[in-house]
Length: 501
Ligand code: SF4
Ligand code: SF4
Image 1: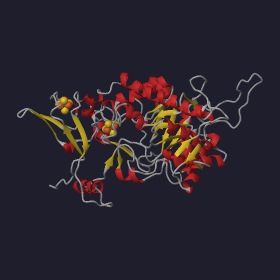
Image 2: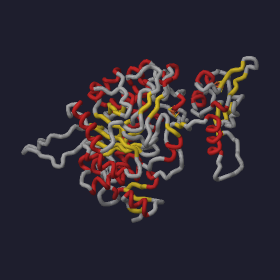
Image 3: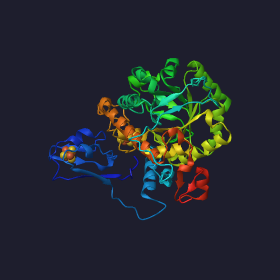
Image 4: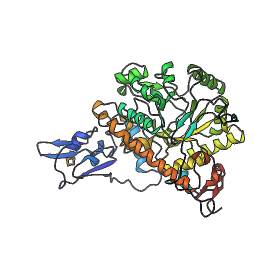
């Protein structure tokens, strides 16, 4: 037997004066941190099991609980930090690859916070969104080079298929299996009420959710789980997933314990079997192969659905994007290295990929230089945190954004980064029936509606402040951005001026 050297990451502090021994924490914690000792009539805590999901803290009726970082100090060493040593202890104990959830937590620069937006003063006056109409609707899809109208102004050009979004925001791909049925339904209901889209992820679409089809992006990933003609025709658009920001270059893995009856039927795999999607699509080794798949999907849907291609933001994304446009995609999705996930190898999550801000600017610039920018919509993902990030993304060239972590935070996620254990106390990243039912989709979807509605108001305020009354007029308008705390190279890639210029 090998010794476990790992110390607890968190300390559970219970204020005995406040605790009324109601045992809510005992019942609520799926990690079994809290227990009741009836001999001594005390509630005890086992710190090592705590993942800091805050469920007990939030639900404790007397606010008796506080969770703190465990105060264990290693001798000061800038190189060999406690976190580095903990990982070594874990791997020398298990011999396995380290797994993590959610996005890259390291302190790489966040370029959204190094870009500032413009506002009108004196000339070109600002617009008051409370009194004047503002347009936040966007159309996602390929645009024709020219539009033809008849004498009465009626559009004559046949438009390629488009997806209409009331706000340039969608919910990121999160598969049924990686998240619970109730979390999935909350996203679907909210997207429908908001007039935007959510994304099936790579897990197929349960038949009970076909009714949300107009607001669903159906994904086709390398594992092809749950992909069939009816599925392709059920959504508003199809997304081919080549890469994911949280784990560029590798596939996915849903452990068999998360594959119950319902997930198995949706994915078309046996109950309890691991769902492993390979790193590459085994039929795609070139842009021509990608084109073949894009057109097979268009053919299967009678050329009635736009086809998106999703890639992770990596070193040569701009050249790859150019190839994707030429392969016939209607939209490109670029997922940055801070994008969340249910489970990824820690080393990959923390060290592979590039920031979405730089990737977006480089791709938009390259497509403009090649005069093919109009042929495709650009959608970005990877840690969009608020409405200002959305507005800055549009100014940098995005048509729309996907949000994942922000959406699950609206459903209660406290970013404990333990999704891979399947024991999410908030009923999101779990398939355990007792945990799933903690999230009531009929109530929780309203939190997503509130979040996007609030962002929509803020987007209108920011646009109005710039004297712009339609989000389409901001797209790629980098003059509305100024950099701060950035070097020449970064300003050059972002294509923006320094504050004061
Ligand atoms: S939930 Fe709060 S009050 Fe209830 S037993 Fe736990 S610590 Fe005590
Ligand atoms: S979804 Fe659940 S398990 Fe995953 S980070 Fe959020 S709270 Fe933790």
